[in-house]
Amino acid sequence: MAPAAASGGSTLPSGLSVFATFPDLLFVCEFIFGGLVWILIASSLVPLPLIQGWVMFVSVFCFVATTSLMVLYIIGSHGGETSWITLDAAYHCVAALFYLSASVLEALATISMFEGFTYKHYHENIAAVVFAYVVTLLYVVHAVFSLIRWKSS
Picture: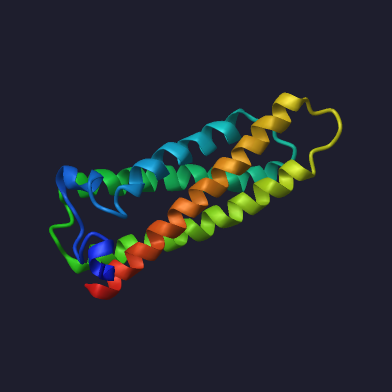
């Protein structure tokens, strides 16, 4: 299978075909798991506010940006222009880097939790770390296939 065929062609989908083409199908998983990271970070006890503030910023920013891109693709606002393919590749590369940094920092915050935190708070942070790494993987895969699509456009 050629790289362009594996990535859903060299154009962006519009309408409901967003949910049927790879890597754009990953928008749904990024939306769900990114929302879980946001919820888990928002509900957890904050041992290191600066670190978890960055994680919260990344999760909210990527959730809103992913939702916006998904809606814009569904309504077809890109009009088949190649500049949107560049935007898609650039966004997913930045989101992958942001989430990688947020995942590492959240793991650091979880490891360094002090005495006095209950197991509930510790487990919430562990779940946030796991889902943050899942979202990082999703964004990395999406970025790779978006770069393949960008190169072939």
